[in-house]
Length: 311
Ligand code: SAM
Image (tube, rainbow, N blue to C red; front, top):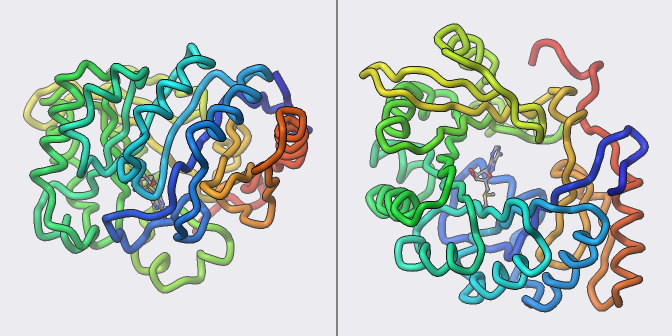
């Protein structure tokens, strides 16, 4: 396994299989890329995974755009399973999930993240521009029925939009046996000056500290050292909440063990580093490995202790 110059092991890839989406969330970072129609073929994705797996990667997350807009995602996952015996997961808006979840599982997917940023229809539409809350809820049920575990529900906390829904979301996920993932609205240094960020960014530390007081137990996800707590919802159901709190958080970056792969066929060192791209498309195994190594050794934690404090 490779380690970067900061001693961080590289054991995980976050692979963007496409860069277009049927939802239009106003805060979306598009995984640090632009919307475009370029996609790697299943064979190209398999090659990059095979090379990475031979060099210590054992955890794959597929993302987009919206990954389920690809008809060949099952094929991509089956090819991934040939090389990875660890976690293969997917983040999706679940719009196309219900009909495909069993096929995805049978191809080798073992867990899933489903984005649901509101439990109320009006806010759901305000955020995504699509009237589909019921479809997403059906997708969550279908993923649970298919036995994917855990099913994580991604909820980006947005000031003045959905911050008041956190308790309802804890109860909703706890009742179903899903895990709630509360995510801070994140951006890079420049993005912190944008109107959207200034208006909607909510300091997740406030919620994390408040909920931690109710925790029966606490553990940490090795990726990003994310805190995960077990607690009772306000109606008495036991549930789990994980906090994804990257903004100006040096600890988060110090525990980052992943490299990104863009839909265009580049390794990207960090969500916030669109300037650090290592293109591998068209290269043979040795060429892909060269780019992989270069990308790993170029990795630098984006947020450092000096960035912390109030924001
Ligand atoms: N379309 C898929 C989905 O909805 O899950 C995959 C792509 S989406 C970019 C992956 C995750 O990133 C989603 O949970 C989304 O809410 C989250 N996300 C997007 N922009 C974000 C931002 N600025 N800050 C924090 N999370 C964000």
